[in-house]
Amino acid sequence: MLRKIETIEGKNFSWIDMQNPDRLDVEELAKKYNFNALNIEDCMTKSELPKLDSYDDHFFVILQFPPISPKVGMAKNSQLSIFFGKEFLVTVHQGDLKPLTSLVELCITGSDEQRKGRLLGKSTGLLLHEITDMLVDDLLHTSRRIIANLDDLEDGVFDQRKSVARSIALLRREINQLRRIANPLKRWVLEIAKNVKRFTDEGEDLGLFFDDVIDHIDKVIETLEESRETMEIYKDTDFVLSTEKTNKVLAVLTIIFTLAIPATVIGTFYGMNVNLPGGADVQWMVFGEYTTFILVILASSIPVVLMFAYFRRLGWISG
Image (cartoon, rainbow, N blue to C red; front, side, top):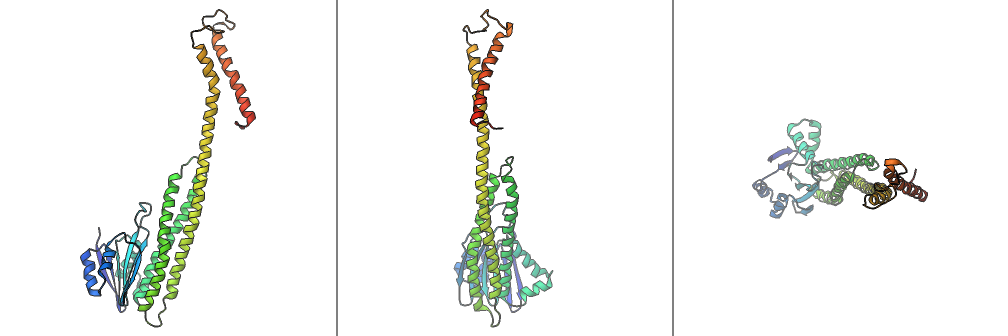
């Protein structure tokens, strides 16, 4: 597992990004900035619930985001722990937040000087907004990808040659997990916006910036709710169509079995060692040596024709 600790200097503040850190690395940083020991324990726990703890000189927040590869496994979310103060910003994560790692690389390499200046040229509050906005935008892209998957799934639902039950189940699981991320995320971003005000200079109003992030989260939630409703419709439709297909197959098999009953009964009679009209031991051979065969065919076919006509009159057999 790749372990990286990067310190990026901004205007009057430092951004420390810790990817897959050891406990000693975090504890050393905690001594420097006087972080709470419980917060250190929380950021080292990979399955901690979202939370925000506020202190006099900083606040600590844990956020949850989708994993980098939802198709591989949606069981565990990606966790981002943030220590925020006026002169520092510390991010702790496991390296599975690709947008964040890309942002760190951009600030280190300076591949986009204009954007780097926008990120590091003002305050920790603006940098925190850029990080959350970028991760929420990635969440928005994920929700839009689900819409595209729903469009592809629609064709499979109405194609009886394909089985889409597994695809529906996997997509429902992904939608539910994203909903569990997006719904609490709105609350915690609102809390972040309130706490950031304590550490911003007069004249620097970040409220509108975080309101834009909230708007994006609302779009994600709205998209997921629509996708959830659409998925329920597809699930019910697939169930109805599958049931109808199964009933048709069973109806055909039942009719075939029913029509075969007369032939089975007649054939059984002529397989007995008893004297029957046209039997092998009977001298009455109207149609020669094939009399038995012809009688069996006639005795079997006539009931089948009568049953077929009766079933069709009842509407059990259509066109």
